[in-house]
Image (cartoon, rainbow, N blue to C red):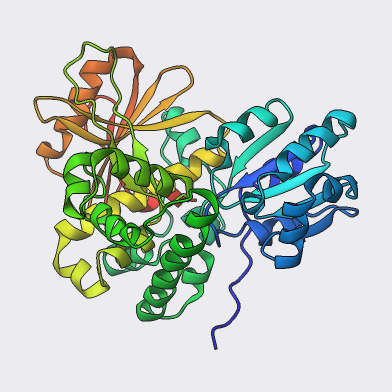
Length: 413
């Protein structure tokens, strides 16, 4: 038997506790099995009753008499709220009558805010925080936020570099607590396959009402092959007999499930020579490596294939930093018609940019600077910093506001 997964300190725990002191309803949203239940049970205040809609009797009560169920609760945690979204209107009613902070702590494995009825019903009454799979910072017990540091112009130092096969292992392991706790790549792959099947068979049916569930696994496989690339809905859908509208809708469903995200292009203005097509980016590199059958042995031999999954890994780490950062950040990418590209462009609330290039090699050449230099010239004063994250050990300046830094700087001391 597997040992139980260790408990990690989650960086958004303090945010959740803080929100409960002044907001009636707090929702922790994020993928199934990312650690939401563990977190809410850790931070449950005395007097909060715990209910989960994964329990069939509780779910039946929620669906048959949502108003009656909520009326009987003073302060409560309700886990997996997306299984009975009708509870949210009942919560709105009781919160409007009694605005005490910290009345309801909810968790949801689907992005409920994409449902119009939900977004409207709890506007101004609910704060939403996102819990993604474990970050490397959480696994290594470090608290420094890479995004906040980068926007001050300082990159975190790396006490213990993670390079070569150790980096491959971290990337293919991903961040789901259950996968992280498993001892071998084979056991992690077995878990990932079950996880993907369960989401498609259960959560998609709960939230999206998709008729042809048999098409979804094949479409997800097709999307995995183009992770980190621009998304042509017509071409992708055509591979498995979907029209472009259905393909776009299915991508929206996978976004709701926190499996992937559409990444928009950064453009200084609408007339600039940039490509307008979004990129598809997966959130967890472990799930992506399972979907494309990338093993540690193949990753070491085929650096190009590993490079695509490494980009997903870095994107996922930056996304996790964004959920717990002091600043407000948006993750974009840059590509223009002259083929200049930057893997990730981070924009803060003031419009300043940090460009991030991701490289699976242990060395950096002048050619690797092309995209960042173009972005710097396009953005002008908005350009704060350019960073090439690579499979090496040194942090070195490469010219005006551009640096090379180890990938491990993302969770450096």
